[in-house]
Amino acid sequence: MKKYTIGAVFTPDLNKVLLIKKTKPEDQAGRLNMPGGKIEPGEGSLSCVVREITEEAGIHTDPNKWIYAGRIENAGGGMFYVDIWTIVIPWNIAGNIESMTEEKVGWYNVWSLPAYQCLPNIHWLVPFARNFHDQGNFGTLVFGEFKYQNQ
Ligand SMILES: Nc1nc2c([nH]c(=O)n2[C@H]2C[C@H](O)[C@@H](COP(=O)(O)OP(=O)(O)OP(=O)(O)O)O2)c(=O)[nH]1
Image (tube, helix red, strand yellow):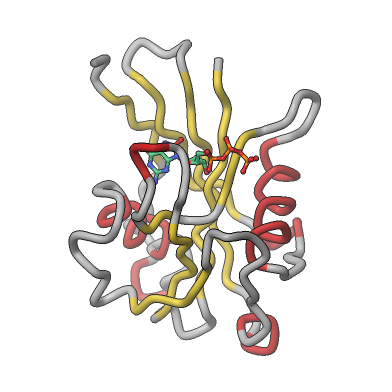
């Protein structure tokens, strides 16, 4: 079973999301995704997302501030899952993001994500994750478990 995390990181105004230009795996190369990566043996899902954001964007995030948003997995389960985490970070930390690997990180306007550059499910994962922080939308919060059809 392959286990991954991705982190939806927002600025305090909820207008910008942190995305990374992927170079791997092959099906993601050249496209924008949220930062994240593989959960190491013995590592917790939350620890993984905190570590990956540091490794990829050079910022430390408070583990207590992350919200678990849901999980996407293959239909039937057993092959892989991706845990989705989300956080709002303070402006002074948002201003300090830095690409730590060849995969460049940057802030993107949530209202005008570049259509063809993003992984397809980014277009629903971003508003889904954003909803957890949007006080205007309290009461409509939906938690999820989303399964993909087996290929
Ligand atoms: N948005 C989105 N992300 C996905 C999907 N499937 C999937 O694996 N991911 C994410 C989870 C991981 O962050 C990343 C795949 O891991 P990776 O190739 O970048 O990293 P890796 O396994 O080498 O792990 P690491 O070296 O960064 O720890 O893609 C998906 O369907 N949608």
